[in-house]
Length: 257
Ligand code: DGL
View 1 (cartoon, rainbow, N blue to C red):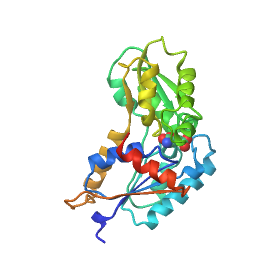
View 2 (cartoon, protein in one colour):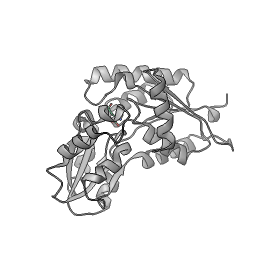
View 3 (cartoon, helix red, strand yellow):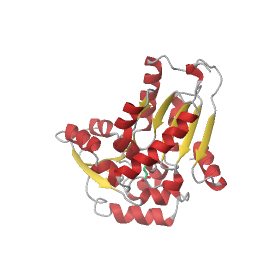
View 4 (cartoon, rainbow, N blue to C red):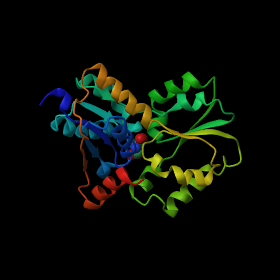
């Protein structure tokens, strides 16, 4: 098979990365995508680095066995902990995702920018370098949300548990001035409307999926790897749980939410 017509591999610790895949399909409609959700080993966001590296390496090997031409790491946690190693070990383009601080700072809104993400993402060097870059221009608050991705993994995106979690977590910020909220975990875009039920509706909630998808497209163009197909590409979804319910939910999340 010609390199251009190979699929693109996408992965996350579970269903969260589907929020990025949805955007990638819009930006690159003629590409084929193979998605791997590692729900069996979710969450990644509270694991230690060695464990995380092992899990990610297994997933990447699976995608490589599917002959992908590029890999999109649709997980902020896996990006912060493993993307540098992956780039050293594989000679295909590897695109990561990180909390979208730049667009949040560029809104120039008054108040705090809350960066919701997993504990691993917020404690890793990558995020701290990013924060250093913008901290003189904005009041940035790292906002670790351990446990939230697990609630989203359960699949009931409107659950009372999620509302309770968010209400409790955001209670100190409700009345204070929030400039914007950055969703630095790919699971969180699926509960954007629940967040907006708690904080004021005009507070912008920003995620990095569009920027990352555009970056993927730029890389494919630069490396002459863009598909030349005219028809729509396919999306194949795999999940380490091998549970038909998770597969159904995954395809549903690609269409409905
Ligand atoms: N979706 C992942 C992220 O973007 C992490 C969720 C988890 O903790 O597994 O960080």
